[in-house]
Length: 226
Image 1 (tube, rainbow, N blue to C red):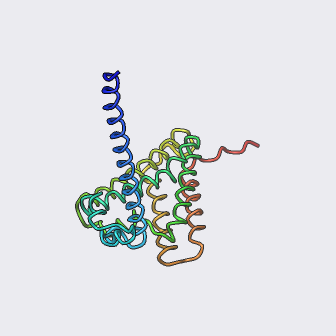
Image 2: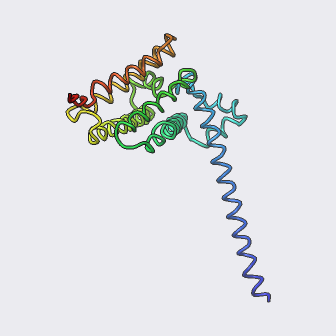
Image 3: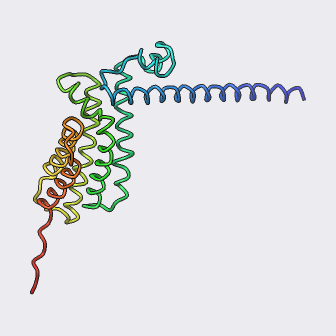
């Protein structure tokens, strides 16, 4: 009997210790996510360079050392914000479009989702755009994280355009990167016109521009047989 008890107690103790460790890990991850959320909101308003450990400590009601402990440096915090923004962008723009059929329907869905995102960012700001202004002439891991995130998204757009060509929805002789470049240019122009210049009708002009791109690179209509 005593032998059984002696073997059970260490097992219970180990299980309890593991449970406490898991709870501590979950709490730490939750706290880190709260900091990233606050930092992302700050970056959308005043840019990645506006992020400071001190301000985040005030926002999250934590000590500066508590905030710093989760990242180790301001630079790592900025990179975490870039990754979080990219993940949210992918979840809202890219992944839902994968449910659309390959080809032009998927390209249209990507653009529609992107436009929905921009409609929000006209008010809140886009760190891909503000970050490009802040880090375009710098080197380092924050710039690399920004550039690789934007490039990954553009590569996904190029693939969607190429698939539309494979499906016969767009001209096979068109340059997929040129098509993607022109679509991307519409988004950048929309941010400038709507957020900075506050010109009315910018969203409608972006939609019109997108349809003009598809018309220009689309397959010619079959001739009518009389």
